Length: 382
Ligand code: ADP
Image (cartoon, rainbow, N blue to C red; front, side, top):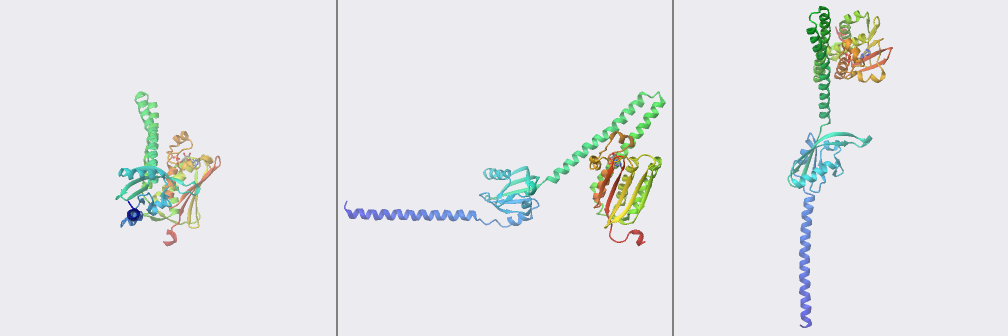
């Protein structure tokens, strides 16, 4: 082969390599454009709007697990940091759903907020593919729902325990009466004790019904307007017999009358419970004060006794359902441990509060504070 052939061959080879390179470059460019198109794929119509109106928190991720939309709820729950998911449990679930194509549900604890260490919330998270390019993460905050379920469980456990005692006592007493049928004296004494236990059961049932009614209903939804002086009169009156039996003088002192909005029956029940406790936990021949005043639009009813008092470490707990400082003594007085928890719920459902000052051996003052209704009190209108 002479030299001119070599030159021609080299030129042809050069062309071939050049053409192949141009073709390959073209292909690469086309691929690149496709990748770009996927990466910046427009979010299908309606998804952004849908995520923003979701009641639960919603996040949409693209194929490379980058967050492309997150709802205000998701931001409030701190699910997203920059363009990634904060919780590794959710990120792991997203990866699994990409590979299986099957939606997943997971219950998890998530730390919300970073300031001051944040606090834990209980989430139910659903991860599901959205078409074949996106992933949808929905998270519902179940913290309150689970807390309420816990409260209900405790409540039922408490009630069962509390009802068992008087019911057990009634059974034992009935058996004793049967065994001692020939001895009228013993039968009479057992029957009297049966009456005490039956009374206690009756009172407990009534108070439980009252309590569940207060918790179920919002008295401000169908509020009446009533003067606090009238509430105090009725509540004092209802405690008269109990107080007389212990020669205790109840001394009401209404400095200023004002109206309250809500349920007169419930507020009366609350004041009545406070006065009845003051009488129960005071020695004979003492005084119980019931003072009413209005301070900056707040009606204050303060019930003061010179009774046994409440140690500082018990002062929070006495408002809990069924809590009694001295259960043995309480059995004698017929206490149910529900009175103060009713007062606390009545106060809260009327937008008010109840507070306690007490010193063992000196006495206690319970103060019920309720917002005064605007405008002049009933009496002045009449
Ligand atoms: P109870 O039916 O036992 O009186 P409450 O819920 O009304 O239930 O009160 C809870 C506990 O708080 C009582 O058992 C008692 O130990 C204590 N307590 C309530 N009021 C007074 C008071 N005025 N003085 C002293 N102790 C009180």
